[in-house]
Structures are given as C-alpha cells and as structure tokens.
Image (cartoon, rainbow, N blue to C red; front, side, top):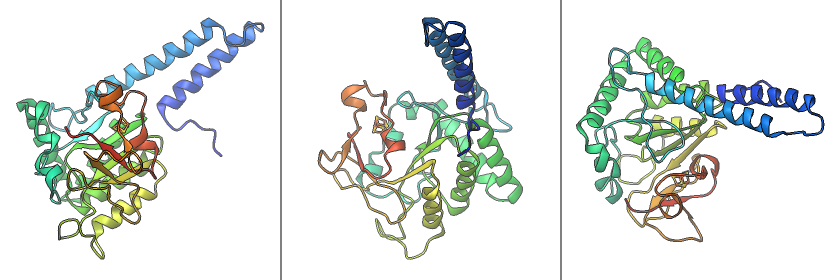
Length: 276
Ligand code: SF4
C-alpha cells in the first residue's frame, strides 16, 4: 500500500499531523493538546478555503465564465450543463419536471454559464487536440477536490464526451466522483442496448474505485433501475424505506448534504430523493 498522499487535502492533513506530533512530543504529558488540535483545525480550514478559491478562479478557456459550479447543497463542486439540451436520453416524468429547469437554474447568468460550458465542450470534442485541452483543463480544476458531482444539471450527451470524463476520473484518483445518469438507455425508453459505446464507457467508469455511477429512474415513484456493470441506481418520490435509502437532506439538514456522503460512498444501496 502506498503511503504517498494522493490529494492536496491529504497532503495538508499529513502536514498538520506531523506538526501535531512534533507539538505532542514537546509536551509529553498531553498527547493531543488543545494547541495541536487547533493547529490541525486551522490547517484544514485553510485548505478548504484555498480549494474554494481555486474553484472560484477556474474559468472556461477564452471566457470569464466559471468552469465549475458549487451547488449550495453539495460538499464539493460540480459540473453543470444546460438541462434537456445536453440530455439526449431524457425521458419520463422526472425529466419532464427536472429541478435543473426551475428555481435558480432559470437565472439568466446561470443559463448563460451553462450554455458557454456546453458550447466549449462540444467544440473541444471535435478533435483530439480539443479533447486533450478539455481533459487537462478539467483535471487542473478538480485535483484537490474530495467529493465531485458530475452534472448537477445535464448528462453524458455522447460517447466521446463520456470517454473524456473517463480520462478525467482516471487522472484524479484522490477525488470521489458521483455520476447520476440516464445515458445507460438504448434507443427505446428505458431499454438497455445490446451494445452501446456510451454504456460500455459508463461501465468502465464504474470499475474505477473512486467513481460511483448511479443509473437514474425515469418516472417519479419508479424503483431505482438495475443496470449490470453500474452501481445501485436512484429514483425520486418513492418512500419505500426497506429497499431504498431515503436522502436525508431535506428532512435533517435544511436541504444540504450535511455530513451525508451516501451518493458517493455506498455503491451497492439504491437511493430515493424527495420530489423537488
Ligand atoms: S443521499 Fe446524502 S449525499 Fe446523496 S444527495 Fe442526499 S444528503 Fe447528499
């Protein structure tokens, strides 16, 4: 097992730990004194602020538009594209009433930012050089992040784009990615294709230890889909507490994830979200 820290966060915590141990050695009667605990806390807070600042500064190349978004609900940043326009396999009542087409997502500034990201991405996907640029830009912005959500709005719109994400995920092993998606479907609503480059790419992502790929249900009240090769799925407005983990964000944490990281960490248990 390698003891090399894989992310900036791990490096910061390792440094804080070393400082704490040195301080502890200087005060042998108090193994973890208030001073050392405070040192670790300051180091952690400093890291979080530094990473947020890095995300704030990352822009779409050639524009002043923020590259990543940071939804208030989430413990980390996200990638946001226009709902429906970037979701070619969006069928069913959940997509008809998509949360990403309502509320704050209707602000002109948010829609413009999503549009610019989408145009830049589509353009990049046209050539090998463009794909390399897209991958390196995304990796630079994401490295150091602990929890990342792929698409708080939008979806995998083609296989080339999905393969570019596979590269990003592989190059950021210290980051945990959660990808909710309906791109697993074939040509007919909800059907699985016999062979599909998109589905095969999603399966390759799901093999990575730092990635959770959750197939999303099409209709409110449906059960979470089971797709061979992907992780446990997710649905909305299905209160079955025996078969589905019920997202606690609205009930317990005022709409935020709070301390919950279930969507990233529990790959084998399906999740239900309340209707937005
Ligand atoms: S289940 Fe947990 S991690 Fe997932 S969205 Fe709800 S609160 Fe966040």
